[in-house]
Length: 203
Image: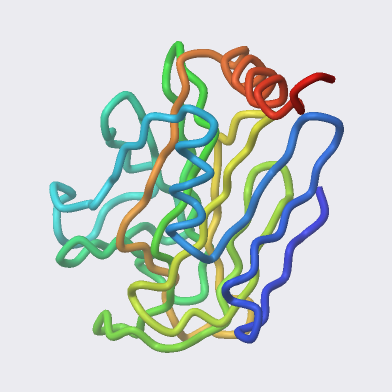
């Protein structure tokens, strides 16, 4: 899918690309993300990293939240402080791979931003990339900066965070959200039901 680029002036905008009945929605608004997640019947799970050990972690560290299993990788390893999940080395990409056995992850979002060596938030251009090539690029200015992806087609299995022009900073995540459905076919059925429900009377 084509990359999605966002400028601060359009931070409230919702962009999407669609093919036939499947669509991938990208939103910097958590309330819009939540509405979309609910509209396709997802159950939501939140990873706060509160139980993740503080300090250095090797690349490939794995954990879970609800039915979602996830692992994080970064060149040079990972580092966690007070629930902030980051890379151990500056300028490296932070990638999360996830799965939910027997289920389908149709949405992922979170608070993505950049920090300095002391975990102070520093405004920076942040790129968030999905496994299918869809990306969101924007200036993230605080620990509450958000972006979410919601798919009504293919499941989402990976997300990567990088800082294109800030090699001295660290990509950081405060919280990740996952939207899960029981089976891939559930999305199509929900979409069909919504379409039928929108028919005009007498047609």
